[in-house]
Image 1 (spheres, rainbow, N blue to C red):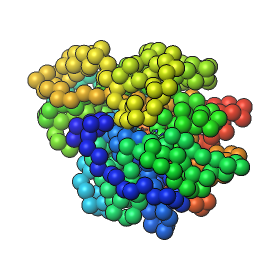
Image 2: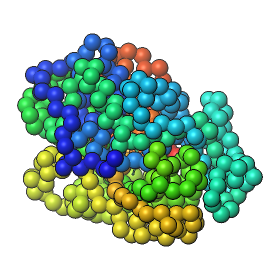
Image 3: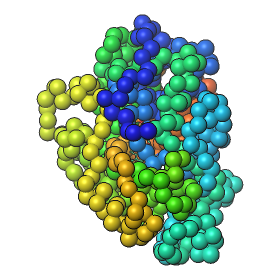
Image 4: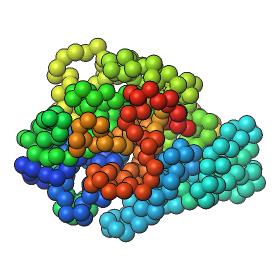
Length: 441
Ligand SMILES: Cc1cc2nc3c(=O)[nH]c(=O)nc-3n(C[C@H](O)[C@H](O)[C@H](O)COP(=O)(O)OP(=O)(O)OC[C@H]3O[C@@H](n4cnc5c(N)ncnc54)[C@H](O)[C@@H]3O)c2cc1C
């Protein structure tokens, strides 16, 4: 399935209701999965997206459903998410390419392997099947590759799925269950009166409601700043390639110190570089840049600071009101970095010669929404009754999306969420808490 853009036909166009119990802003995996778990509670749920369902990060990601390497507070949620993913295809009646074939972190040396010791400890506490593989065990799992690595971290129960199919398929199931989903329907403003949500102003009209979920990915910070709520977010552009069908190397997800590949359901691979991503600071981001210094230091080698990217309409110096219009950027479709694509071709041909005759048939980029500590916000907003936020999944929201949706559905209904989500509270950015950096973006 090619990447979605604003030219892709509209597939979800429920009529705009005048009122709803809950309005979800953003039809990525987080918004759609929240709607999925709200659907059978008898609530009237509307999902509005300025562009297309899963048009942005949720169809552009690598498709890893990964427990391996997760933050300590994310891991139990991710393990629940895996249970949800396992039954999803059957529940929604669509093949979404879910395969539980494991993740490998390939290591060139012992130091790299040891850097995962802390994660292994957390994994054991949760009875997760992560293990270290020596060279012999590693090469019994992968084939058609030179012996470049001496060991690996491996989690057999990790999985993969096809993002561009999965999220629209869940959305379709939501629609059939009575959720309204409206594409090309940006929310211009969250309306608040006396510190209470009273509705949302959309491009198509007003929807009266007293509960709102902001799950607008890269745009959450901007949407919230319009109601004077500051969410620190950095935009990180990552470029991706899809290959033609290729011989089997490994049937799951694998990454090393500079490359990553994931087997696809069509027999090709989704490829990426792990050592090159571009960071864009919005005007607000520039003001908050100090907050991001620990994150920038963590990933210093792979992050390249950029000021603007016209293909993604990111230009902190452009004050033109038209530039901010939702319809000016229906589907954020940044151009992949030419430099990354070139390096990808060279690295893969050199390191994994099996790719030398395999065409790169499609390339795209996605804009990751990173928080200063590289873990998301899943919370209600203090002081505004009915406002909820689930965003900033920092490059790993696809796998955890279903359980994050379940948490948000419960939170919205003021029911127990079944996990300790205090690490994901919104106030950590403003209450003077020391931020604890997650493992990666
Ligand atoms: C290249 C890349 C690789 C990745 N690889 C992985 C991976 O392998 N595994 C993993 O777990 N995660 C991965 N991720 C991260 C994952 O894709 C994201 O964390 C996840 O998709 C975020 O989902 P979301 O619903 O929060 O945001 P999004 O999918 O970005 O959706 C937000 C939606 O909100 C809409 N919106 C914004 N503003 C408004 C508005 N005002 N009104 C209405 N709608 C609005 C947008 O149009 C958009 O559709 C990757 C991300 C990228 C970019």
